[in-house]
Image (cartoon, rainbow, N blue to C red; front, top):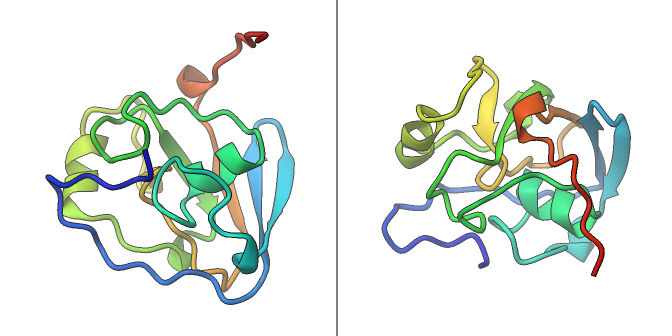
Length: 135
């Protein structure tokens, strides 16, 4: 999908200029993000939590394909929220539909860390796909 939705106004993001890490909870899996390797996948905005997770085979449910048209990729940014772009009004509208909101809730498809610090993300229990399908 590529993370673009023609019906919303894209917020400005600053892509990272240096390496940083993202730790995904509860699996406690940490991945190194290399700015020169972006994009890792085609899901969500370039450099977004979703795009990086998908590029490292970490599943975050995203029914709309990462275009800010649902709330299934809701995550909680436990550390490093200040290094992420601000949520757009469209993202906030979608978050209103997500269960278990916190002050650190974001849509993984729209949240782009700038690389100034490491980030810790919690995938809520209701969003963890526990079924693994074989091809």
